[in-house]
Image (tube, rainbow, N blue to C red; front, side, top):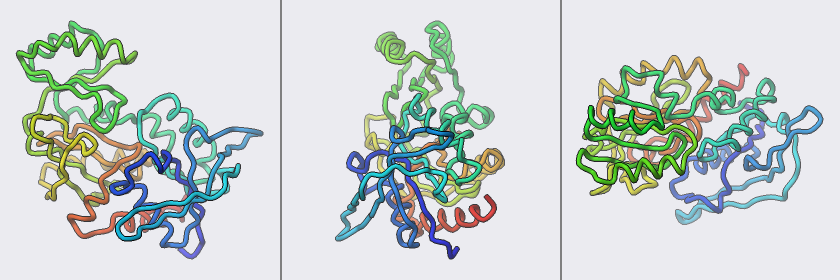
Length: 318
């Protein structure tokens, strides 16, 4: 693609991120290598006026020197976002009202500017709920805040996991063993901290072998890593102390991806990370999937290059 593209990253402030493992940093750096103009804004910088969507936005320069990631912001300006070629929604969850508001505003310009992922579909696909469309390949699951229902579920499946619907990075996930006396306390805390329902699942012993993150771009498998939980912890997320390991995809992994791929393409969910434990899919991450730098390291590939190659082709037909 010969045109010099204008790219806007809607993401968290870079000063609050661990840039060394950040997937968006790698994607942005590759955009710079292709001589694209790169800009940064946060969701709260969005505003709507006179039937147009704007953002208080800054140009962004990324660099790596001596294996040290760095960045530099330009001056703050108000710019109409429909003048950009591509907007990447890359801020981390929680999937809250601020996130939903951003999807509504960006949806207003999606006919003109290519937005990844499609804001309408992102709004309708929170990861822990979206995955329930594929009940045949996920662990036994209940979404509720009814204590008696949770007790019955626990009685049936013995060893269970309770987690918030809209959390991320392994935050707020609890394993409750059959004889765990903290059951009532944990449920009480969830009821106080969360107004919405929460997710209850059977515990999968295979998590001790790891929780596989598989990256799909435009419905196609690009790469994967295995994230092994620390000793004494059931959470495998790297933010929660999980260790990334090189992995190979099984026949079952391919079957899972084949099952969900048509749905991802239909919903224009271009960049997706799914989580697989044993033979089950547990989450479909469409908000800000991570893990590409770890996959690059183990598999000697550059997912960010594949990302932009495919996105350039997609832009031609937008």
